Length: 291
Image 1 (cartoon, helix red, strand yellow):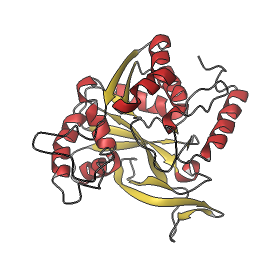
Image 2: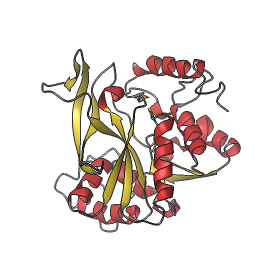
Image 3: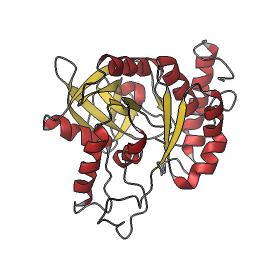
């Protein structure tokens, strides 16, 4: 998913920010890791207004070099079900739920959802791919990469994370969107006050799902648009999936990963991300140039 506006990042398209030693983008590494894990199709979900820049920065290159199918879906604020229109004052897309829904016609197989501006590491792709293969043909049985909160914090400001509660079989019970989480001397806290467990598992919007999930999204989007707060609210995957878990519609297994997340939430994150990729290259985790 690469259609977000990135209001905290500042000028420029954060998904297209070079961070690797040879100008690689974060999504370059994610695509590399996904293909290495066994995925064989890429669907870029972008805004129409960044199509040219996106294809120039990465899309055309991936289509030429990657041994897999490449397709595009476009998330637009005006792409609404019949009978609905964009509320006055609404300027941003409707959130990650609508993003995946935009790719509905392209999704015919189990799939993994990721953010284009987040680095997830190799382990999570392998675990999600293996889960989807193992449970192929099973509907409403999903998975999620569970990161350790302390491994997902920014040095440069607060972040939003879906804090997870799991049962004894590692199935999600709840995913609670928690805002303004900051790094502290003792681990983690809430910017406006309050404690949060730095060792908690969190969602980084990396899900293993099956095609019928798009039908669930489609029906749920209509209900979402009927809400009184639809002008400003977002149709978000963690919130949607949490609701499905609570009513017993689906099961979601949390697959723990100890890899360290990093991303460009803020413009100041860029140098840290560049340094982090350089360390991974120096350690032999990635070759340079990547392709």
